[in-house]
Length: 134
Length: 134
DNA sequence: CATGTACTTAGCTCATCGGTTAAATAACCT
DNA sequence: AGGTTATTTAACCGATGAGCTAAGTACATG
Image (spheres, protein in one colour):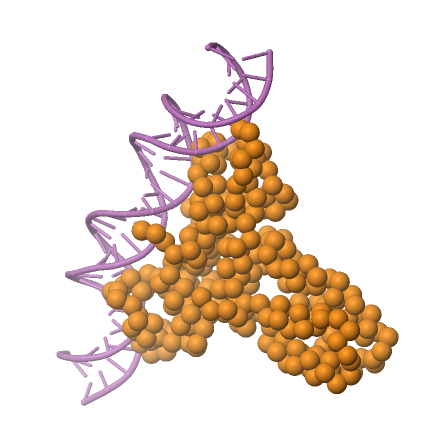
């Protein structure tokens, strides 16, 4: 019965109302009432959607007096992107060129420049998104 | 009744069996029988899963004699990644540094090197993933 | 303390989903 | 033609999911 995290995250994303809520939250933290406004739907329905999103790790909630403000939670988004990365080579042509490019950059760096900052090393590590396995 | 494309794609991804099938297909095109082997599940069940994946645009299928080989279809993956891109700033720190970095690179390039290849221009355009709106 | 505001929980309905078995279809191989 | 292999369709079942209304909880304020 306890669905694995990735499954519950994808399930949560499979609903347009919930994706719209996330889109709203991308603009900033807000209350349940505020989130409910755009939808022609009862408040309990929204409440359920929020519970699903929370359970999926896509949002987190605080409490401020009688309000329960919601905000985007990064972790599950990151996990989804990580999973998606296993397939990135199928559709992102620049992804396939990236290894070569990084090699070239590192070679350039090593020969012609002292590490005047660590930014390029960072790039080699951080831009290699989407290669982690499930 | 006709769910929007993004919803049916996410729904299709919300099942571990289907994600496992996709993982297998990432290794290469193969038949239904082959795909079914790892699972303790009837063949019709697999057939249904494949139909869901196909409907979601995540796979496409050919026909070769009595086999109906399946392969990854890029389009829906790309769409998911595009949608996810709207939220990338919440979890990918390098994403926030990317604009600055690219500016710096272009500046460097313009001053110190003739365009011995177009690779860096390409990067500025193609690495700006995840900024399209739904 | 009483009332109002912001939510959540409970209990219901109906549709969809993931699985089953049994039967049908399709293409190949004597 | 008749059999084997690969895959789908049909019909069913139990569980889950999205929506509703009505009632409950929590905090704030007059």
